[in-house]
Length: 268
Image (tube, rainbow, N blue to C red; front, side, top):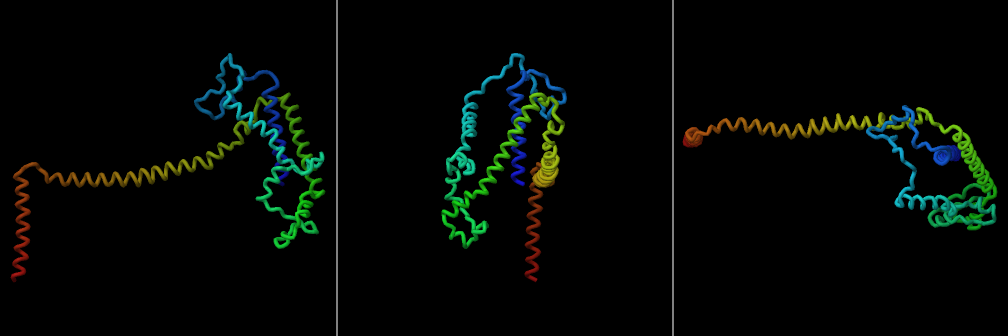
C-alpha cells in the first residue's frame, strides 16, 4: 500500500512539474495577459496581483537567491549517487557502492535470516555470521523484485511526464476547476474547524469572560469599593475646627465613660 501511494504521488508530481515546465518555458508570453474575473479574486485582500507594468520583462534573480538555488540543484542532481542501491549498481558491475547505507551501519542493527527465510530470533541473531548477513542483504529474489518495482516506478513517472507534456502543451488549463482554485477547500475547512472555534473561544471565553469579566471586574470592583468607602468617610471631614473639636470631645467622653463604668463594676 505504501508503495502504491508513493507511485501515485510520483506520477502526480511528474504531471504537475511537467505542466509547470510547459507553461513557463514553452508557448507565447502570458505575463501581460488579463486573467478572467473568476481568477482575479482568490481570497487576497488589498493586493493586486495583476497590476504588471507594460514594460515588464522577466529578469534574473539576485545572487542571494540564485546561489542557494544552484547549490540545491546540484545536490538534488548528484546527491542521490551516494545512496545507489545494490540492485542498481550490480547491473553495471559496480558492486556495492551504497555509501549512505554503509555510513549508517554503525547505528542501524543488521538482522539476518534463518535457513527457512524467516528473520532470525533475538537469541539466534548473535549466531548470524557477517557472510550470512551479507548474503541475506543481497538475496537474488529481493534484488529482482527491487529492480522490477524500480523499473515500474520509472516507467510510470515517464508516462506522467509524457502525458503532462502532451496534454498541457495543447490545453494549458486556463480555466482551473473550482475545487483546485479553492485549494481543495482546505483553508475553509481549517478556518471553520480550527481557527474560528479557537478564535470564538478566545474572544468569548478567555477575553470577555475571564479577562474582562473576572480580572477587570475584580480590579474595577476593588476600586469602586475604595471609592465608595472614601465617599462615606469624607462626609465627616466638614472642614470646621469646631466640628473636629466637638468630635474629639465626644470621643474623649466616650473613653472616660467607658473607664468609669468598668471602674464602678470592679469596686462593686
